[in-house]
Each structure stands twice: as structure tokens, then as C-alpha cells.
Length: 67
Image (cartoon, rainbow, N blue to C red; front, side, top):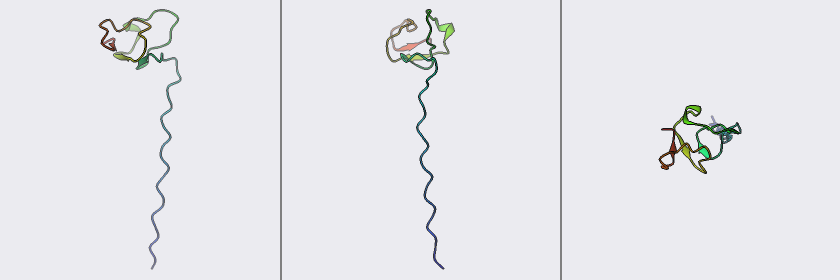
């Protein structure tokens, strides 16, 4: 009796979609885009600064804000 080959593997999952919400792209972790200055109580931190620290959240300048 012939053996049937196994079914092909399922296609890979699509890549995760980047967040298109109101998160500021200068931070890794969601820091909301805001027309007014934000402070750490306004942010779920810590967050990494990956661009310009537009809200001056990284007081130590070590690349990690609101720790």
C-alpha cells in the first residue's frame, strides 16, 4: 500500500504590523504623541530613547527614560 506524503507545512505567519497608533517614533515603548510636554507620570515606563528625546524624559542621558 503506497504511503502518502505528509501535507505541506502551513504558510508562515505574516510579520507583525508596526504600531500605527499615536506612539511617538523617538521612543521604544509607547510614548504618546502630544502637542504638550509629557512627564514620566504620563508614560508607561521605562522606555528607551531611540531618536530625539523630544519630551526630555531621559534625565540621566543613558537612553532609558522613566525608569
